[in-house]
Length: 88
Image 1 (cartoon, rainbow, N blue to C red):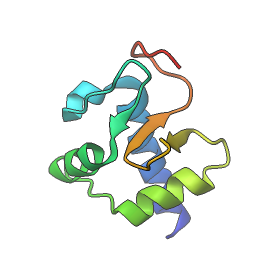
Image 2: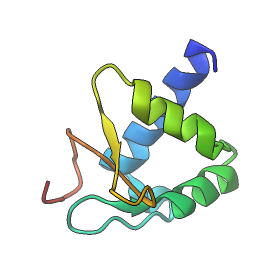
Image 3: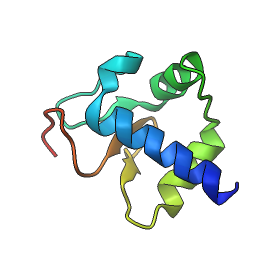
Image 4: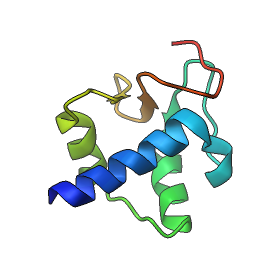
């Protein structure tokens, strides 16, 4: 995937996992975790479809390690910089 696409996905994730999950209908638990399937569905419904493989690549290659998957790979969260209340 090209770098500009990675950057766009990273910015989308930052906005909605750190600051405005409710704007796309995403629900985060108290630890800041959201369902990967819900995120992918919400992104598509908001005209920014992200493929699971793209999401995995962004999480794996982000130099600042901004995002992580839960142990089963079904949850995702931002690792830092939240403006919504989460307990990391």
